[in-house]
Length: 386
Image (cartoon, rainbow, N blue to C red; front, side, top):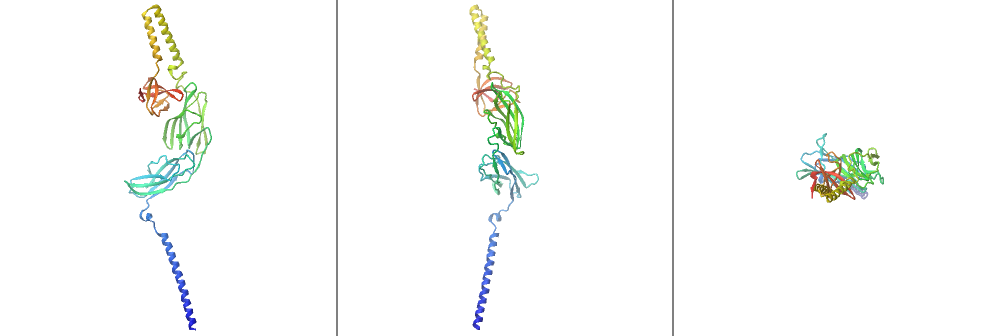
């Protein structure tokens, strides 16, 4: 009986001992997990967060070549900084057009700063950059935070459309146009265009070989261009499309070709020395010189000799080729010799041109573009004599 009681006592002690060990083990495990969760990282422990970033505005869908805007807000609750710097990283085929844009303090909150960055997508394979904003006190970095890149979908519009001008805009307005006879077979048309939230710098008229910008004014979101196009003289209009992002459709712009009196040239040939009038004038002067020469030989009168010499000198002077001058790089060629005249072309580099005549501080020049000769006016100070 004593042995049985002893065995029961040992069994009970053993049972309670196992439960105690299990309870202690379980309690220790729970305590270890909570400690792992609550251990603070070095960054959050040592650097208080005083810079908060978020996106205020960005498109969810963009088009090829579209210029679009991303607006970022920075909430800064510290005062020990004097400059804000922005960096872009981890991007693919996508960089901001105004990476150095300054942050502007919000009028609503003295601790809030706003920045607007503009981007353009050329290829479908792109990734928006991560934006890192850093606060500096002099040359010392105070704090830096990052915004991860946003996701956007991409598509190409008007693919294969021969009228599409490559412009994607919230609004595009044709302010006016002028058309002038340019050569025997061609006319020069000038387009004056405004656009809002657009990529007007990509404007192009398909099917026209000689075209380009004379003026580009880019104060985004407002843009303004003056654009020239050399078209066949018989063409009645220019039609192009742009994509309206508000209406989500192509909008047609039609430009009627109506000739004005501000002609570049009304002669058969642009070079005055080669025009029909000049040609016949030279023939008449030469015939008169020959006539007075024969008359002098016959009559032997000195006044006839003087007339012969006068007509001979006039003929020689009219037969002398135009002198050439050098046009400075970045000079502007005007259609007429006036400050308010339409700008035809801007010369990217030095160019040799023919000097036809001078008037009111302008010089009439003839220059070659491709196989054709053209006439325009330049300011006298833009000309360097050879």
